[in-house]
Length: 283
Length: 278
Ligand SMILES: Nc1ncnc2c1ncn2[C@@H]1O[C@H](COP(=O)(O)OP(=O)(O)OP(=O)(O)O)[C@@H](O)[C@H]1O
Ligand SMILES: [Mg+2]
Image (tube, rainbow over the protein chains, first blue to last red):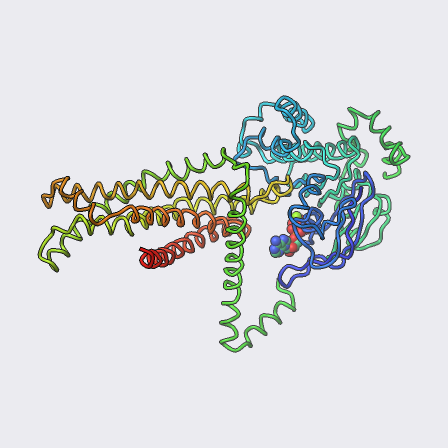
C-alpha cells in the first residue's frame, strides 16, 4: 500500500525536470512534497498515476508497476487513486452534483445511495446542498477547491494525491482544507501525498516532508528532522515561517477536534503514538 | 535575468549560418504540426474502432446533434439562400454569352449545387462555427486539467469527448447538406421562375434529366466525410493545446485553418474519385 519511485528521470524538450528521483511512501502516511515553483512537483504527482510517462525509471502504486501498464490496464490502478488538481479541474459543463457523482457511477451504486454519498462528502468539505445544482463557474475558487476535494474522496480511494490544495486561498479556508485533508487521511487510513509551498502547514500535518530541488531530493524527514536540518534550501523555507507571530496558536484541525477520540485511536493503532504528544515534540 | 548558459546558446544560434537559422525556426512548427497530424490519425483510428461497440453515449450524442445541427441552421439557411440567388443569375449570364440560350439553366444549376455549392458552403461554415467551438472547448479542458481528471476517473477522453461529437457531426452534417441543397435549389428555382420565366414543372422536369440518385448519394457521402473530419481535426488541436488563453486561441485558429484546407483538398479528391466511378 505505498507509492514508490525508482530512479525516475524525465525531461521536457531540453529541460531536465526529474533526475534519478527515488522515494517511497509508507502505509497510511501523509508525505508533503515541498519545493520552489517549477521544480517539478506537479510532474511528480502526475507520474504516480501514469498521466506522464518517465523517460526512464519505474513507479509502483501498491503492487502495480504503473510504468509498464498500457491505457486500459491503468484504469483499475487509477480508480485506486484520487487526485486534486492544482486548478481544481471541475468539469465545467456539469453541475456540482454530476461533478461529484460522475466518478461514482461506475461503482454501481443505485441513485439513492449515490445521492446520499454525494451529500455525505459535501458535508465533509463543509458545503451545503444548495450548491448541488450550480455550475462550477458560479462558485468561488475556494468552494471549487472544496468541490474538487469532495469529488476526489467520494469513491474512497486508497491513495490521495493533492496538488497544492490550499494555494491562493485565504487563511481560514486554507486552515479548513488543511484540516480536512489530514482528518480524512487519518480517518480513512489512506496514503496521501500533498504538494505544497506552505512549509508551515507541512510541519504541522505531515508525517514526513520531502524537499525537491534540481530534480532530486534536497531533504527528506519527519517535521522534527526537517526543523533541525542545516540544508540551505530547508533553512530558506523555514526562515519564511519562523517570524510568524502567535507560535502558540494551535493549528489542530477542526475535524480532528470533532472526532478527536477516533483519531487518537487511529494514531495509536497505526503509528503507536498520540497526536497530541507529537504536536508537543514538534513545538 | 538570463543565465550565462542561455546567453551562450543565443550567441551560438546567432553564429549559425542563415539556412541553419531558418531551419531552426521552421523546425519547431513543423514538428508541432507533425505531432498534431499523428494525434489526428490516432483519434480517427480510436473513434472508428469504437464505432461498433456499445454503449453509444446517446445522451451526449443527442446534445451534440442539437448543438451542431439545429444550432447551425440559421447561418446555413442565410448563406446558402443567397448562394442560390446568385448562382442562377451567374449561370444565365454565362449561357447567354457562350451558347446564346438559357434553356439549360435548370440542369447546370442543379448539378453545380448538388456537386459543390450545396456541400462546400455548409462544410466551410461548420468548420468556422462548430470546429472552432470544439477546439476551444477541448483546449480549455486540456489547459485546466479537466482531461487529466477524466482519465483519472477511468474515463477515456476519446470515448467521452471525441466519439459523441464525431457521430453527431457526421449525422448532422449529412442532414444539413441535404437541407442546404434544398434551400439553395429553392432559391435558384425562384430566381429562374421570377426572372427568366421558367414554369416550375418545366424546371423540375429539366432537372430530372441531369440529376440521378447517384448524385444525391455522392453529396451525402461528401457531407458525411466533411462532417467526420471537422470534429477529429478540432479535437486533435484541442488535445495538443498549449497552456493559457493564448494557447487556446492559437489552437482554435490552427484548427479552423487546417479543417478548411482539409475540406478543400478532400473535396477535390472525392470529386475526382466519384468522376472515376460514375
Ligand atoms: N506537459 C509539459 N510539457 C513541457 N514542459 C512541462 C510540462 N509539464 C511541466 N513542464 C515543465 O516542467 C517543469 C516543472 O513543472 P511543474 O508543473 O511540475 O512545476 P511545479 O513544481 O508544480 O510548480 P508550481 O509550484 O508552480 O505548480 C516546468 O518547468 C514546466 O515548464
Ligand atoms: Mg504545480
